[in-house]
Image 1 (cartoon, rainbow, N blue to C red):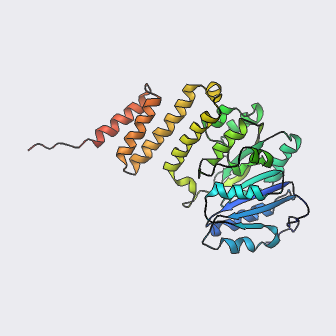
Image 2 (cartoon, rainbow, N blue to C red; image 1 turned 120 degrees about the vertical axis):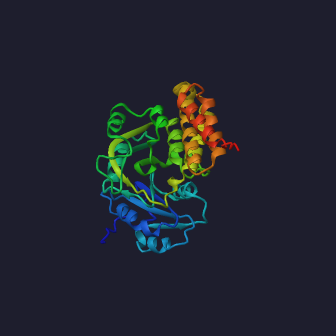
Image 3 (cartoon, one colour; image 1 turned 45 degrees about the horizontal axis):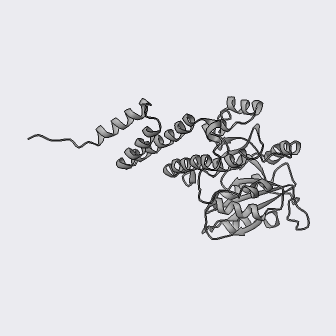
Length: 315
């Protein structure tokens, strides 16, 4: 592929956007991602690849792009830590965080920068995404909701009810990211939701009704760890309420309990599926404590208890 050289690293001039890509053992998928980034229609950007201790051919893939990319290697510390390193080394005022296995649309940066260029008060603008190999009408945020978010603006309830922010579809202020302390390095899956909450509670957030990236589903994806996903989502909800007590009034205690109970229910179902029955019962009990009069959880608990009860044989 013939690549334009206009994004070559220039130490004497800061670009408008810094694209940060954290990667770990994704050499087989990384090149397609990088090609989608370096061929953007918007040209005033730099690309920083943070290798989080890969043991495959990641370094060789990155270095084959020469001066088009900046390469940073660190010991394995997780995706959030790697992204924070990229943000700290970025020279631009706007940050685009990309996964190393997804694909950007050609006008990804141009579309998002068009929003912040008109509104420099924004902490973040985010858009929609599709799926690699999926049908056009299938989007991460349902199309009806996507139009409503663009028309009416983003509310805390929109972020809370269903996780809709993907960092791959966002453009963030570097100043804002540094002000809130970057990404939570204890999180491996729910960092998007946590970051969205912390930005939203302190800075203006906008939404663009457009697909700007394509998510790749594959066996090696971190997002495939269902137990970790539910536990981290519960952690992020508790963290939101602790750091911003006003969210109780904004959302209502019932809404918070409903969301947490749903996460415990999904955790119970996953644990049951993998045979961790005692832990499944523990999770469904937590769901019932939060929503004691919701029949679905009571019935599920009863089904688990009946199925788990040993059968007594009579002689």
